[in-house]
Image (cartoon, rainbow, N blue to C red; front, side, top):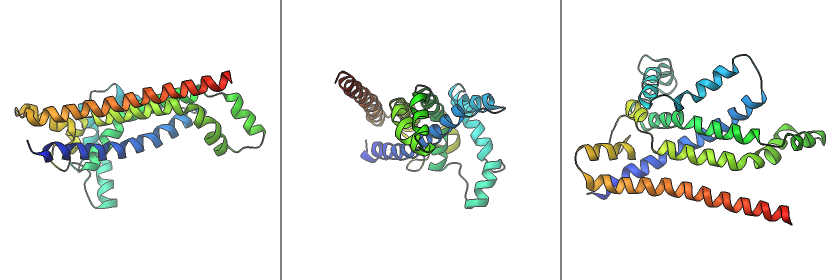
Length: 231
């Protein structure tokens, strides 16, 4: 086993996942708040489309992305026109696949978190002259943050484990698009357990660490809140 065979897929996966998670966080929080506070015709259809990747098989999602970003697909033509390059079979394609499959988890968690925010406090702040941005960042976001953070961790772990859609749009190019799940799959397929086992162990540790951190953080926040209420 070469160290590079294990280290490179992990570093590439973390790079892809961190970029994807940042995109999912911004888009998920923005759309969750927007669609929660606005009512318009077709809103339910838009929300259903946003959540669709959560129930579709990853290969179906990957096929849809393949059509959209393909040589003759609308987004493929657009990216070639704007950037002079094809997105498919690059690490950018892996980011797009990770964003699409992880977004529903972030969106659902953020929406549920915003629904629990005390609207009376928001209205009181507006009555005192606070603008919408100030209300959002000083009242809405702090109250919704625990739920948003849970969605962020779930989105991170889901993006890290993405396989089917990524394989279809990014392929399995070592050092370029080969993420940890693909490296594990092809290592097992070829009987190379000396590579597969460390990758599996790293994946379990990273995912477990993210969930454990969230549990510890949530517990500390709960006890801090309880002490303030009792004080």
